[in-house]
Length: 553
Ligand code: AMP
Image (cartoon, rainbow, N blue to C red; front, side, top):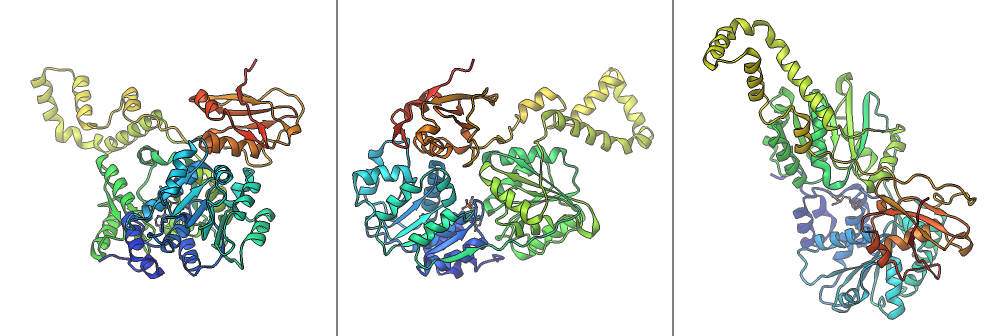
C-alpha cells in the first residue's frame, strides 16, 4: 500500500540503515542522495556540489555507515564541519541513521567544551568522529596517531571551512590520516582554493552536481519569510489567518511533518488532510477529490505524495520545508497558477537555508521578495474582515426569517439590542478572539529570524581609517581585541575562533571590523561573561585573543 517504496531500498544500503531511514520518515532519496550514495558506496573519492537543505548529510552519512565495522572499536570515519553547530547536527544525523546498528558510536569534537570527555569517547571506541578542524588539531597535538585508523574522510561545507580560516588545520589533518583513505568533499561553491585542495588530496574524484536549469515561473507571486526552524507551525498558523486562499497545498519533508502540521491546522478548525507515502492509493484519491470540491481546503504533503496532483482551485503553495533543489521548488509552486489563474507561493526559510534561497532565485531568474510575519494587529484585522464578509450576505432576509425570534429573545433576556448582538457575536466567534491584547497573548508574536548574518570573508574588512562604529542591533554589544590588521588578522580568523571556541551559533555573531591595531566584534549581550570566560585562553594567529567588552562613548 505504500505508494512509493523502492527508493532507498534500491541503493544497496544495509537493510538496518534503510529501516532507520524509513523510520525517520524519509520517503525517497533526494537528488544528491540518489547520485552520491552509489559513488561513495563504491569507494570513490567524490566532490559534491551541494548546499544545506539538499539532504547532503544523509548523502554521505548513509554510505559511510555501511562501511563501518561495528566490531572494531576504533575511529573509522571522520567528518569535518566548519562550526560546532553543524558538527553537532551531523553527529545527531549519524546517530539517527545508525539507530538500528548496535555497537556504532559517534562522537562530536568541537571547541568551547572540555577536551577530556571528547578524548575519552574516542578511546572508548567511537567509530565515527565529527569534528571542527581547530579542536581536532588540538587533539592531534596531544596524540598524533589519533586518526591513523580512519579510512573515510568527509569535508562538509568545505568552502565555509576555508572562509573561517581553517586551511592550515585541514592540511595538518590530511597529513595525520592514512593515504589510502576515501575522501569526500561537499561544498556549495567550488572556488580555486577548494579545487586546489581536491587536486592535492583527492584521488580521481567523481564530480556530483545537481544540474540547475533556468526555469520560468510567471504568474506566480512569490515571497519568502525568515523563520527559526522550531517556529514553523506557529508561523504557518499566523500566515494562514491573513492569506486569502481558496485551496492551499503545504509542502513538508517527512511523513511525521505532514501529520504534525495537519493536526495543528485541524485544531484551528481548518479542513485539512495529510498526503504522504503511507496513504493508500484509494485514500489519496479521496483526499484529492475533496480538495477539488471544497470539502478540504488544505493538503499537507511530501513531494512524493503530491506528484501528479492537479487541482485548479489551489491558489496558494506554502513551502514549509525547503525543497531539495530549485527544480523541485519550481515543480511545487507550479501546483498553483493553473489554468491561467494567479497563484501565490510562500517559502519559509531558516537562517541556515539562506543560500538555497539564493540558488532558487538564480535558477528561476527572479527575486523572491521577503515579507514579514503578520502582526497580531494584522491577524485581528483579517479576522474582522472575514467576519464582516460572512455576515454581509445574511443582512438581507435574516430579519424576515429571524426577526420574531429576535424580539422574543430581547423580551426574555430583558436586554438591549446592542447587548444581545454582542452576546451573539461572542458565541459566533467562540475560540477566536477579536480582542487584540488577548490575541497577542494567545499567539505570541513569533519573531522573524534575524536578517543580519555573520560576515563572509571579505565583508567586515572595513577600510581601516578611524570612524564611528555603526549602531548596534538590539541585544548586541561590541567587544574589542587588541589584535588587528597589523597582526595579520582577517575577519574569518576571528569568526572561526569565536564560533568554535565560544560555541556560538553563526547567527549570533554580528559585524566584525578589523582596524590596524585592534578589532571590534558584535556579540550577544546575553551570556557575554560566560562567553568571554570560554574564550579566555583562545589564541588567534598564534596570539592571545583577549576579548573584552568595548565601552561605547
Ligand atoms: P541537509 O541538506 O543534510 O542539511 O538536510 C536538510 C534536511 O532534509 C534535514 O532536516 C534532513 O533531515 C532532511 N532530509 C534529508 N534527506 C531527506 C529525505 N530523503 N527525505 C526527507 N527529508 C530528508
